[in-house]
Length: 358
Image (cartoon, rainbow, N blue to C red):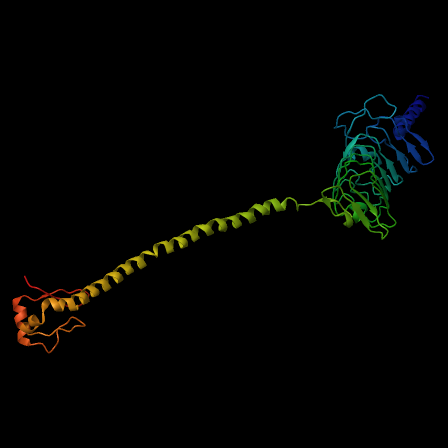
């Protein structure tokens, strides 16, 4: 009897362990496991493979690294917040039946890179109503079969390139609306989705994208962003470059302008020193004719009259009335006598002038 009781107790314990989700307070209906509003910090264990949908809304499924927030609907107790990591997902790792997990309103501030590795059977993921401000490359690694993603109402600001890489060819519905701070949508994220038909809801965001009638993805970007018609919204470096180039271009332009007037100043001063040579040259030009005119005046008729014809005759010499020079026909004896008595020759302008001796 005692042995039988012991076996019953062990069986009950094993059943309790295998029905961890029942102890947690989860309820079931058809193939749906409902574990909402239970302040869970992780997904319950031992969920049978027959269940395909797991409802985990309004719990604390995060690493509790953030500040506490009063966010659980109908529950006065504060709910923790933090990053969703692989540790909170361990109990369904490799589960072959679950295709949808709902983690909305769990105080999730971000998703750890690799948190969903090993969950390749998921086709629907709901993480809306949290505070996931940034979807980084690697946030959804492992979700290779995902078809529907809910990331709306998160206060999201950016979707980084590579974030959607695991399901670019499988996702057919993206709900990212009511993210009132979403501006940056990197190239290769939304516009990288190739499944058609494709439904995109990004209404209420500063930057939003949609499928065009031609089945291409186009975006309307927030102010200052580019890439809209190409299906992304990114900041451009163009406004930053001109201020850097502008000073560099202007500096050389001003430098030559300053030097040019400096070199032109000496050119103007040269004509100032040029006038003196003409002034100096004009002085001897004026003096030369004056000396010649004096010499010619000395040979004037008045001088000849003063000397008298008899004096010329007595001296025995002849004078050229034009040049004021001695004629060759003058008496040699007279020339000699004149030299002895005191002939005075004044050389002015290269001519000889006769004067009285001392």
